Length: 350
Ligand code: UDP
Image (cartoon, rainbow, N blue to C red; front, side, top):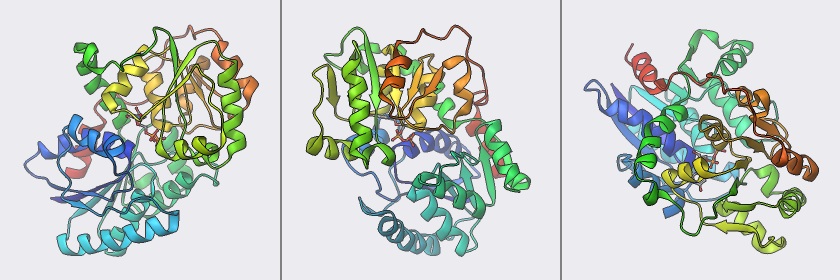
């Protein structure tokens, strides 16, 4: 079976690393990797391929940054050319980026079956570009691989049960797989100059980066906190911060880091503050309380007993959530058993 897997952004490299490893270990599958180039530099792309042993992409469209329509349009043209030439039996897309949408749309118009990994996530907030990408991708896919039972319910409510399978979350597989590398060689993955006790924060969602007022409120909360705060910052956010906002001295902005260094930063953090989908889950998997800097979350399984507190950019709510006690209740499962990629492989073969 010939499969073209389409990736383009940081979280997709992490998901594809885990799934590709399984696909390529199976003789019946010939996988080609198409990188759209949505994320493209050393810190946002190359380091993930190197560290996670992701095969060199067979194709790179090098689309770079751009508006949603422009970026998606360029991808559509490039992906279509490659699919016409390669004639795969299936196209595999991940998550909710413009690369996901472009891959699914190009393939379905060529009558090439599409399988969507991390299907069924919904924030019910149509202002999020990712929400539109998810809804459209799920609607036009042939196979939907759902990471949680909430995702299964969402797809059922949209009449998509017949093509939906519960697999668990490939990002849970990734954390289990790579955590041991980090624990076995902690010195290698430790960020130099990191304080003993700190909060880890990431900010990159459009709702926070496109609105300087929201970013100011988040930084106002940071300035009221007594912890050092480490912020590996997405290039999009850095552009805005440079221009408009003063950073408190205990907030340490660093370059984006590789996945293994990020796991180590999460493992050693007191708490995590983020608007990232992936990092909310990783905090939960690694037993770190999370404060979600958005008004809703798709990962509702993480909310129980305040393991994840949704604050949006409300300054007081953020400060209170950081100062709240560490949750006492054990975390629940709900993201599968760490074999999501095996289940995906099995379903693809059958
Ligand atoms: N991540 C990383 N380095 C960083 C920041 C994040 O490796 O400097 C990882 C993080 O651990 C998670 C993934 O990137 O696995 C999340 O990606 P992102 O926040 O860009 O996207 P989202 O999950 O919100 O779609």
